[in-house]
Image 1 (tube, rainbow, N blue to C red):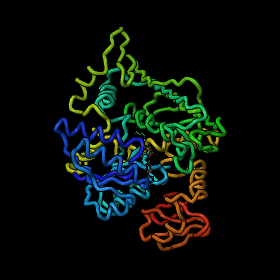
Image 2: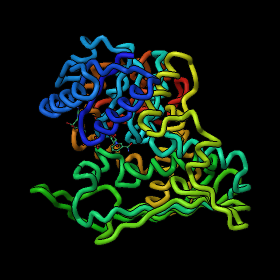
Image 3: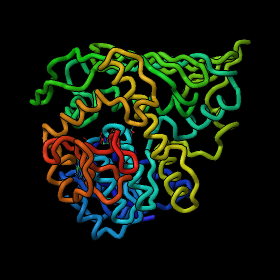
Image 4: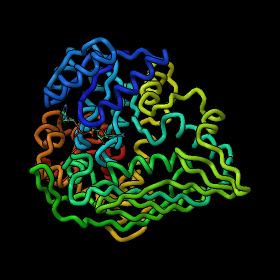
Length: 426
Ligand SMILES: NC(=O)c1ccc[n+]([C@@H]2O[C@H](COP(=O)([O-])OP(=O)(O)OC[C@H]3O[C@@H](n4cnc5c(N)ncnc54)[C@H](O)[C@@H]3O)[C@@H](O)[C@H]2O)c1
């Protein structure tokens, strides 16, 4: 499989390590034949690392559309800011390529819905490189729970704080702006957690959350911003199987961070990445769970992500972390954000089908206000033609399933994927 990288920032090294591991184990000889970053120096530096590890230097591009046109690729991995995920994915599908997206699947659920539809429309595979459910440790944990190793799950407790004070998480200001990241850390990091809850315990029915922005100004390295993404979120939820959850996610933390996931069943506790503890005092280390439940799974989650992309493309095997699973994890995050925004409990169904979107509208407004390159009104209008109008809605494509349309006047308010159902609006 010939693979291209779109974005060569902070996370790209972890991907190269995963690909190297697969090659060393003789499991999959992926070739990275092209890499792209709008910062050409980053692309060149990453290409040099690829050459060092895999012995072949990929072609280097600053414009991913040029790479798609000339790259001779089978698939791409997309490692750019969240506001770009859906447009880059659509361009890649249209170029006939399979897509591995980074988490979160999209900046917000409407764009995730669109991405899943686009993959189906072009008949391409869409996976999400989600390290919280991939890799031997996580696969073994999910399989052990499903096998009843701790009995029926009753409680999920997950706490994560990052003590970045009033600086930037991962050195990236964009992660604190909802028009680029979708929300604060609850989307960037939180979606790892919700994806793990879903894979390990099952579907979530309803959430209630309090969210806030405590640090009104963040600044580091000569850059100062006024964040629009939440830096603290405390959420409770109920799973479809009756279990309860308590989840906390915050970057409004100084001096000392904390964290950990505990899954309690009727007979014990499973701590992903650590061990399983049983009521009688027995403690089973994670390595033993891996030997029993996931001996065939690569240890490195990023290696696993490429293996499952390949298996989905070559054998049609459903991935553990496909677009649908990524979308569900995103919907749980947005249910918490919707709850924090409106002050009421929110069912995941409301977010999944686009019925409740008061919070999401604030994200879309910020995307529009900043003229996000992924959300140019003129860009969308240039791609579409108005085919029908219903009251305040104009459908902008022949195929309603693409769900591109505008509300209000076509020029003043563009939305994607909200409230269109087979040509009707509601
Ligand atoms: N553990 C994980 O799974 C994990 C960890 C970190 C980041 N991520 C995800 O990976 C993605 C990238 O995160 P990051 O930390 O590498 O961010 P980053 O800001 O370090 O890097 C993003 C890169 O994308 C480039 N870029 C921006 N627009 C582009 C375009 N149009 N074409 C080509 N390149 C473009 C930027 O120049 C930059 O080099 C995000 O979706 C993030 O959430 C996942």
